[in-house]
Length: 141
Ligand SMILES: Cc1cc2nc3c(=O)[nH]c(=O)nc-3n(C[C@H](O)[C@H](O)[C@H](O)COP(=O)(O)O)c2cc1C
Image (cartoon, rainbow, N blue to C red):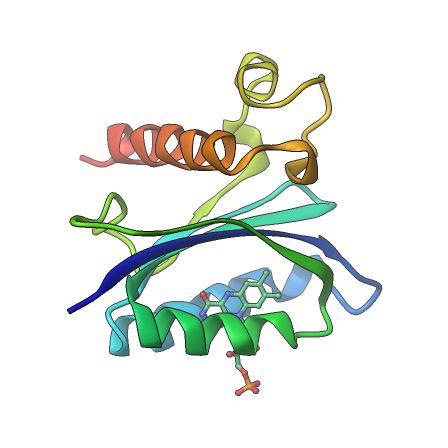
């Protein structure tokens, strides 16, 4: 088993519709569960930042699908690494709403006050995602 974690950033396009978010997550969770893929999706109304954890071939195959999705563009891998353990094992795809992100969190991980994942380093993107995972875990009963 080769577990990996991949984090990418992208920019929404005119084909994206906020109303589709629920359906996208539902489908993603169903598919990811079948493939034992876990992760978090953050969307700030302009950019996506997504973390995918799972077996290398499954994560690679899903990423190849996601890249071709016309609802976003400029898909860029920020971080990719082999891992010994997952950090997002609770969720087949958790959604991190923008309302959970504070200005201090943005300042902590980016160089300004606007969240722009393309300005993040790979290590910064990972730290942001791990912070997000802690926030989401703290909310669970
Ligand atoms: C930002 C974003 C994140 C996505 N994340 C996932 C995901 O985690 N799992 C998944 O199965 N599909 C995800 N999708 C949807 C896939 O791109 C694609 O629509 C899905 O694999 C179904 O492909 P198909 O319509 O060709 O069958 C995501 C799409 C976008 C735009």
